[in-house]
Amino acid sequence: MPLKITVVDAFTDKPFSGNPAAVCVLPEERDKTWMQQVAREMNLAETAFLLIRPDHVAIRWFTPAAEVDLCGHATIGSVHALWENGVLPRGQPIRFRSKSGELSASKDGDWIALDFPALPSKKADLPPGLDDALGARPRAVSKYKFDYLIELESEAAVRDLKPDLGVIERLPVRGVVVTAVATTPGFDFVSRFFAPAVGVPEDAVTGSAHCALAPYWAGKLGKTEFLAYQASPRGGVVKLAVKGDRVALCGKAVTVLKAELVA
Image (cartoon, rainbow, N blue to C red; front, side):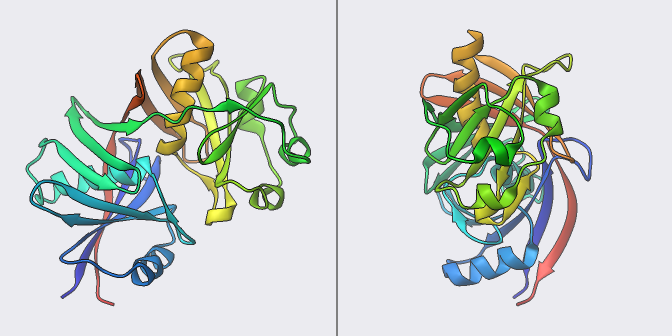
């Protein structure tokens, strides 16, 4: 039988902005090779595959090149699709089981709120050649479970960045997050994310990176709640709250495409 695929723009309430994710609800388990082929065919930053169980939803995330352990925007997209398509009652809290453990989602007004693990970072040495590859001198360098986290001197420096993706691709990490205090009114900090090693040259809006950015800026700014902007060409808004070793990761979402997968 054909499988329904829903494409959702996450961390936005306007079509063709935010970060698009494909969402596929499976009737039964499928093998990893097939899921990777579907993700490559969709050619989006992330494709999420869901299995509905009696007490949880199993979720896996794939870029066009690899399976990843955690993805915020495709989880926001999954929640939106499950509610909008009537797979689960609209607004019903959802428990996910994933490679990053148990995650939960709930409705927070117009926002979808995810309970994700915080990803603390530690001060690190700058990898050789990375400052040249970025074309900007880092103010601070940290590293967390998945990526390097680079603080730059200004929002303008983050927005103007034109990195050498070949150098970033060779680093022994998933990718590189760059960030700075925001000067745009209403926002606390801005960021961009580059992950060519997993087939994502620049991600539009990266939920998992914000699980590191939130505790990082909590330590810098002395607060626990933030409104953040990811300054990619598409752009997206993320609302955050640090809660101990967890992060409330909130975003809006809009459906842009519904289709059937027949292969």
